[in-house]
Length: 596
Image (cartoon, rainbow, N blue to C red; front, side, top):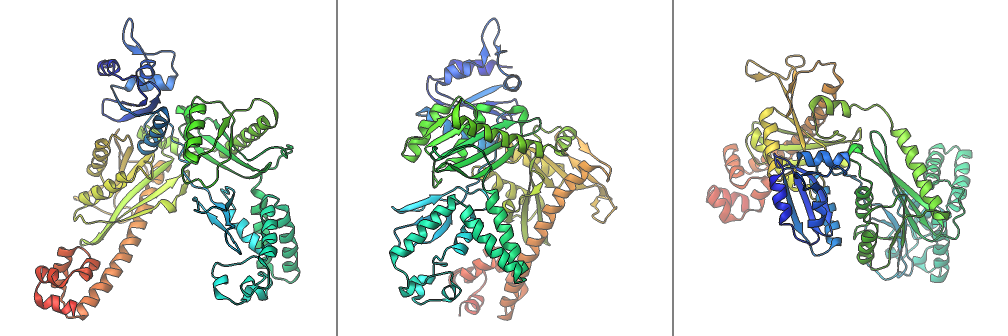
């Protein structure tokens, strides 16, 4: 079983790179990186008296090695390159025995460009070009509220367009701006207000006191809606900071990371300290606690957070646990941001108290997250490789081949992830071709948006096998199930109660009772995909009908419209086509009608 692996190990180079283990079905099991490929991969195995997995390794790795039949590797020029490539492949391919943290959000920062005479505070998620840019944050939550509060409390230039007008506006009349556009405040005086606002970003009690006063005035004047909005803003600003009794005045800017694993899930907590104060915090949960690897988790979390687009990076990163790639990752980030960055696991003192604070908060999150979930029951019933906490469901919609569209909806951690929903304009005429087109386009986007834990297709076994085949062609291990109506008299009756839903999986075919929560969970995914697809189809058809009507008003009949659509594909393409192209597709008479 392991003959091919033994042969590959003999020919491995003594260079840095990444290695990949595959099973008998060519599905990717595991991705790892190495300073020396030959030495690292050899450490997984015993060579005498028989070639076998190294029994001193963890249960997770031993289980992976038992399934592995093949190794592939990629040589890179340095260990840092191997670190980056390993993380990229895990994110893109989601191997069965690598944990994927899925925390790839970019956090907002408040920034100000002080090269301007009368600068403004704004929000950004990327680096802003300029020599005198100051960043404050990150603010995973509440950054927009904090920004709006700065403009509520301080008489700053309220809008970008204000200075262009050249005259005082309503903001000056209501005393929210001092009208620098009319020279009613000097540059020096304005910059003093900017300095006070900067101070308030860190010392937020200044903002909260002013908001409380305004809230009370609104309430006394029975302006309850405005008072309620200020109350909500106060709560949001207060929640930015984790309360702590630590004396942190002597500490510099630091980011603090803690990752802990629980029975069903793990959690990552990030604390962001600026000028000795924790200004914001964030947490995210992850699945795959049975394959948790602390070393890989910290490496992946830090690489995902500190990308080239990160506006501001603290020089000191504190981690609650020591991990293998700490030194290499520190060097990589230092090179990436052109300044020395230290990743440190403190054992005592104020810094250790900070990591302990992060761990305490992580444990509190796990307590709140510890609830009974249906996903593990789905995994057990359908014999899935991974618990499906992130699910993508697909459906398509058309009417007699008109306005053919596809839709993908995303379920993540018990909620619809509507920002990740996708719509597809489809060219294929049959259901099989349409699903193939849609899934192929999704697979091509895995490098930007990683594969989920499960795909659900609205269709039968034929479409499920199509999806599996497409995934196998790119060596991606991803569970796929399909749900379809039972066929009665060779037709899939959709009328309520006319036919049962049947679920197709790799393991078996399931006909569950309508009261079964697991069936209802799958139906819910399918129905949301169907709803989203139908909505898109109706909108597109309405638009196409309008364009069709406009053509017919020009005296072009339905048959000619259909002929032009078959040739050009879309109404937009017909509109952009030249006289000569329309003549070829139809006739000179039609070309003259459309182009004159």
